[in-house]
Figure 1 (cartoon, helix red, strand yellow):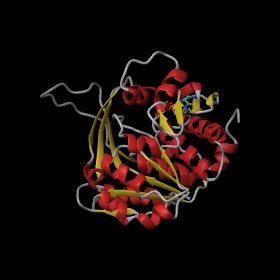
Figure 2 (figure 1 turned 120 degrees about the vertical axis):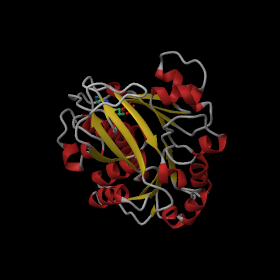
Figure 3 (figure 1 turned 45 degrees about the vertical axis):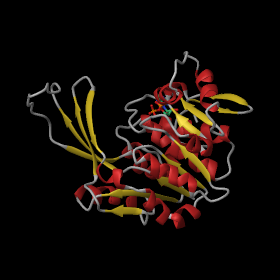
Length: 298
Ligand code: ADP
């Protein structure tokens, strides 16, 4: 029911006493490798919640690619759309210092080779989906190709991350466009005041059918031509917010594909996002349906 089109990365994490300056070498902790990338995170999040989910992505023919395929399959994601080869698997090289500040270098690798032609070749997956969810860690022209090949009646959800100005054709297909504050500011491209209602109005003026703004511990806001509604958050002890936005968007997309209203889907997604921040990591932190049901405050 849910097709995620997007990135798959291996996150390579090393703890350091302090991050190295130019020309300097520092010693770090043992390497930890996590499956990540916004696309791979979203498909795992949806599948763990019980959605029938497929991923259209590209990984390298290497150890990291196999790690990503494994984590998708273990979560129950259909990986027939995961293409292999053409470049090394995308990686994020992450150093974290004791205060939790990190420095990150991303090598997109195979993600950058997911072409419009690959998207056209996956039309079968597109036609089998009620909702398609995409982000921007793959070439923009490939995301545009997704909306050009979207079957009638299939809903399109976009989290424009990393953010950049978007073509009108892509914006017009978004229902909704899902952004956090930073993404909202980049996409609107001008000065914004401090009111999320104003950001949503400025985004709606760019042409998407609907907008969802995520507000961290404040929950979210949904906006359509009929007005805006605040969705309060669930109060939790936040441990690690990594990947919370991906879990939120995946949950939202799934509920929308199942026919929920935008406000109801966002209320569900806020609970999933809250559950994801109560545990360390991205994919490792995503709740199953049962775990979500036992979340305090829900
Ligand atoms: P991003 O990770 O993309 O910056 P947000 O920080 O807005 O996105 O988080 C996405 C969603 O995760 C929020 O809408 C909310 O549902 C949930 N969330 C994030 N941080 C918290 C928190 N501290 N407490 C409860 N929910 C949170």
